[in-house]
Image (tube, rainbow, N blue to C red; front, side):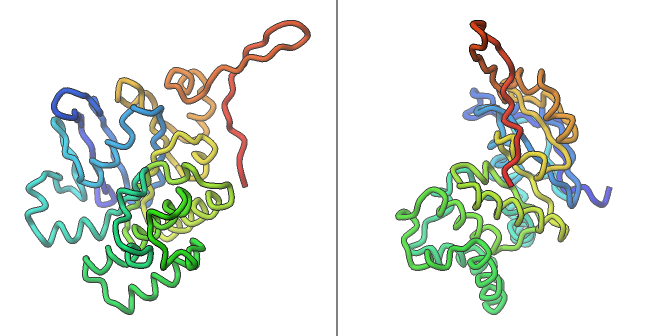
Length: 269
């Protein structure tokens, strides 16, 4: 199919060949989709994104990108490597992984300079993104001196500067205040409306309905425990409970202890 970006077939991955991180993942991702991957810590969400970003390769099974199998050898081809890195961009869960230049401004332009994007285009994107993410006053700061929320915004800017068609985001709203979270979600929705494919890993159920058309639930067994529309998944309490995404809430009322599920599904707008 022309619109298939990623095809994962029975993908298995273990760290050091003995610590399983993914145990048989089958997912097809089409151009322009919004996908959310939810699951408790340790369910394989970050590993899944790293495989899509070709930072790791399956021990078993296959990953195809636009019909071409992704293997380590694929990146020996400079033309393919360049095309892939311009097309797929990832925002890591830990922004410190992405920030290594002396100043914030240098970090933001590093990627597009490496990929040979023209300076006028870089300047245009730089103005747009620093304004949108409200980080103009951080540009001369050293990245290590920033708060976690500021670092996350700079990491998002440095990835978006490449203007990738596919955005991979690992817990993009973790540690952010509600207003910044709102800005980032709005930005992702706008990017998707312009045709970009958005794949987000999160365990924040508040944002799932907005950021996805399709949700995959990863289990502690590192498999897909369920998938469906956000509405289907968020109302499947048993599935969420079985995969540590909701907790049971106890309270005392009229001298009796009542136990009921606590789902945190109210929305922050």
